Image (cartoon, rainbow, N blue to C red; front, side, top):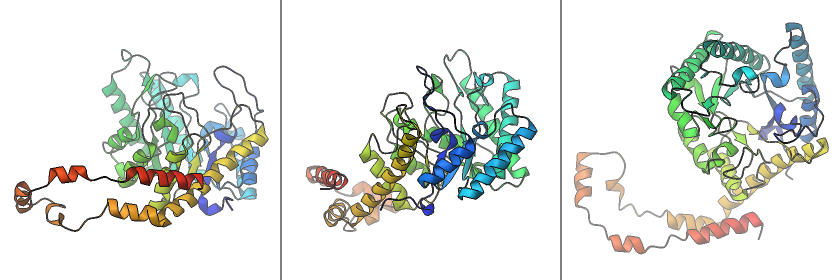
Length: 385
């Protein structure tokens, strides 16, 4: 019943199902699998697509011949399984050269290398069919504000994004760019830490129409924010180009938990929003299996992400069809038209009428909103009672 289909557009990164379980306190617990093996694993669990950082697929020091051989084999695996590549990105955080950032690094040679690396990675993504290119500035920040002028950092980041937009246009690529925010980790403080920051930054670019956002559940919830609100802001602005789904306990390190495994109500309202507004982009799961798992457990993890999304999609349809819930919503939002003359666009006449209007403030304050009942009905629905 909750079996994924291609039209669900469920995708995973090579770095997600390929995560070996290594963490700052322990070595890997799963053997490394090749990109081709991971494509077949994703096909087995019913995924629609696979995404990658450049060096998830091609090692950073690979020769041209090695690169071409790897890409040839990867393309063959895609053709054999039917998986697609909707999104690609660049790793500008793992190699020691990026220890002070990439586009915001103080060393101009590092900034130039970051641009070179990204251009080549964009070429690779387009070659494999990507339509969205994501930028996560994992090292674009500081441990001490003595090290960098934050205004210069903003300007350097803008210069890099303008350069790369021009590169995409110059090559005629059918590609949208999406910026991904995160408040901290692996650096103490990262620039543009939330989706709202990214939306404001985009409007300062030379080609803002090309650039949107890729919000991630965990990155907003790390800071205790309501992720669905960030997604709604991005959607309303026409900037929700991609989305990363996982789960997270607020205030902790970036956990990348299986989607819906921590805050089921938040996951429900997120899925409901995406389905209600008709978001038709990939549902990308940027998460990984527990360190306790072998690769059978990794498959359980991947199936679980997709299954939970589909269950919550059905719950959203039930919410929209529930007679009592909808009656409550209609009551809460009831409007007899009496305020129509005061709302909408401004006019001097409307403002003058509103200034003299009389409101029964005490009566308005006494009105109960029935939100407790509405929320409990939501809980009942989610718990299946």
